[in-house]
Image (cartoon, rainbow, N blue to C red; front, top):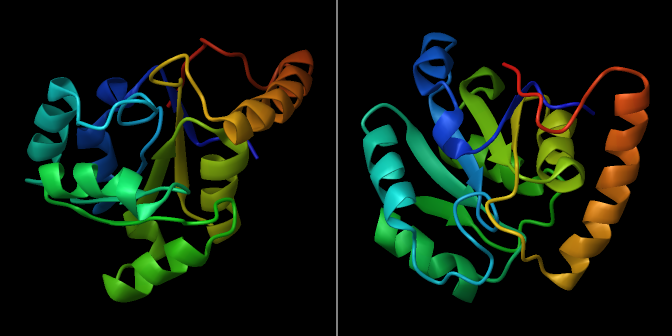
Length: 169
């Protein structure tokens, strides 16, 4: 369940390389990927990045959060998205693939959680990118997920397969 790519943040991803690989659709998680969980407005740096990416990619947001949380980001960025996505289940990725007439080879999911974002992408057989959390705050359920995630990542680290802060891809 390791991500295909691991980067410090969304700002460190090589989007030119993704485009050359045939990626046409970037599917971003919202909370702690595009901004802090307690930020209702889109950070300026994120706004600039997404606007630039929209020149070359279909940009979407996928979130387990409610529509009221995701809506300000969708409207500000002018992108589509799915709220209450129920990741790690891949129902929302199936919907995105169908609605936008994409192939799996064109899609990548980018998020800060191994057991929601990466597992969702892996179960749907698309490219996955893990980034470090944007901020330190988390929702309660996410804090529980992080405990499980840390257990999994510690096992990978003992096997020499993954280490937090050692970026690749």
